[in-house]
Image 1 (cartoon, rainbow, N blue to C red):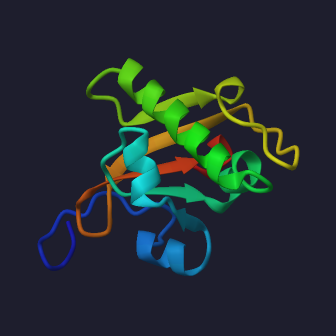
Image 2: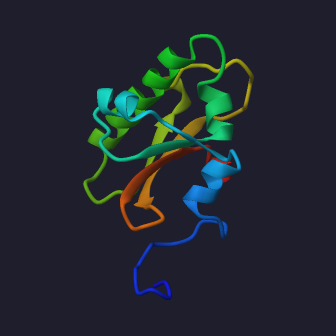
Length: 125
């Protein structure tokens, strides 16, 4: 619980989401792209996951493939689950070999307690 009495959830690595966006660790997923996959909460992807699965030619299409795979994994998971594992075979191949064999999709409270979704590589957790 913060000093102002608001439960903002756990702080990952001592950095706020806002700071992670500001320093380039997180990249905002356009709400329209997330909504097209059926994801209705604010969504971010880490810079590492973006490089591994999205960056390069055809980035918009690859982002949509990632979001579709994440949404499918969420639909298959238990309703009370907060971390979803998306196998790399369900994701588009990025421009560089990252050695990533899966993507994690974690729902958690944002900086002000709102539900948010963060897409990241397993070693970024």
